[in-house]
Image: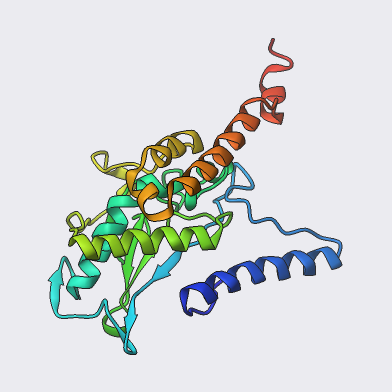
Length: 242
C-alpha cells in the first residue's frame, strides 16, 4: 500500500484512518486485518517505510548541487540525514513499539538489520531516492505496527537536530548491507531498544523527561508481559521432549 504524501500531521492522520478503515471493512466481511510487523515466521514482515523531505516556500529544501556519494543534494539534506542516523538507535522504540516488531529484522528479508544509508538500495536502513524536487529519505526501520505520530516525531526531531548541529552522515554504502559485519546494528529486541531510549539525553531533551518515563514504563510493561507468557512455540518445542 502506498499512501499519498502530504504534510506530516495530515500524513499521520491518513495512516491511522487507513488502518481503521481496513479493519472495519474486513470485519464487515467476516474477516480480519492485522498490522503486526511479523505475522508469520515463514513470511516476510509488514513494514511502514517512511519517506520524508523538508519543504520551504514551496521548494524541496533537500535539493541542491552538493555532491554526496552518488547523489546531488543541499547541506540541509546532508545534515538532516546525519542527525536522523545519529539519533535513530536511541529512538527505535518510537519506530518499533512492540515485542513482535523486532522479529521482522531478519537478514535477507528486506527489513533492515544494519544502519547505513545508500542510494536506491533496499537492504539499507536509510534508502535515499529521487532527485531534485523529489529527493527524499526513506527510513525502512518502522514496521506496520508503528504509531505514525511517534515515528514522524522521532524522524523530525532527529533530522532537525542534525541541521542545527551540522551533523554529518556516515559515508555512502554500496553493496549488500546484510553482509556488512562492521555496520552498527538495528537493536535486536524491545528490551535492548528501551534501554537505549531510557538512557537517551536527546530523547529527554526533545520530548521531555515525563514523556520518556511514560513510554519507558509502557515498553518495559510489554517486555515483562511477554516474558511472563508461556507461548505456543514453547509448548510445541518442549511438551513432548521434556
